[in-house]
Length: 132
View 1 (cartoon, one colour):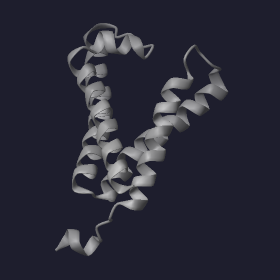
View 2 (cartoon, one colour; view 1 turned 90 degrees about the vertical axis):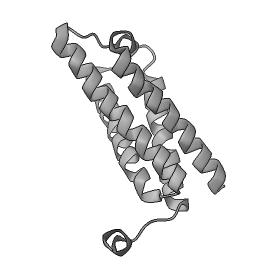
View 3 (cartoon, helix red, strand yellow; view 1 turned 30 degrees about the vertical axis):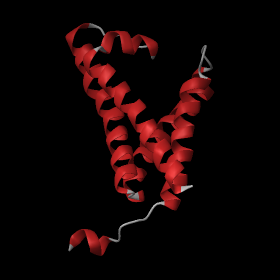
View 4 (cartoon, one colour; view 1 turned 90 degrees about the horizontal axis):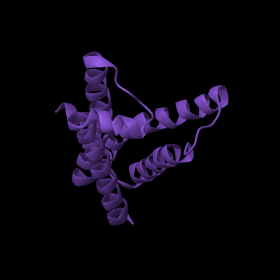
C-alpha cells in the first residue's frame, strides 16, 4: 500500500512539474487551457511567476515527500490543492458553472485525497529531530 501511494504521489508530482514548466516556458498557450489570457508583459510575467510557483512548489514537495518517504512534506501541496478546490467550489456557488468545470476540481480533489492518505501512512519527523 505504501509503495503504491508513493508511486502515485511521484506521478502526480511529475504531472504538476510539467504544468509548472509549461507555464514557465509556454505561458500563453498553457493559460488558454485554463481560460486565462495575458495582457502585455505584466500579464505574461504574472502567468509565469504565479502558476510556475504554484505547480512547482506542489510538485517539488510531492516528489521529495514521496522520495524521502516524509509525510510532513505532503501537507504543503495538500493545503494548496485543498485551498484551490475549496475556492473553486465557492466560485461555482457565486458565479455558476462553465464547460468542463468538473475536471480541475476532480484533479485537485484527487490530489488532496491521495496526499492525505499518504500523509497518514508515511512516517512523520518529530520537531526535535529537525532542530537537532
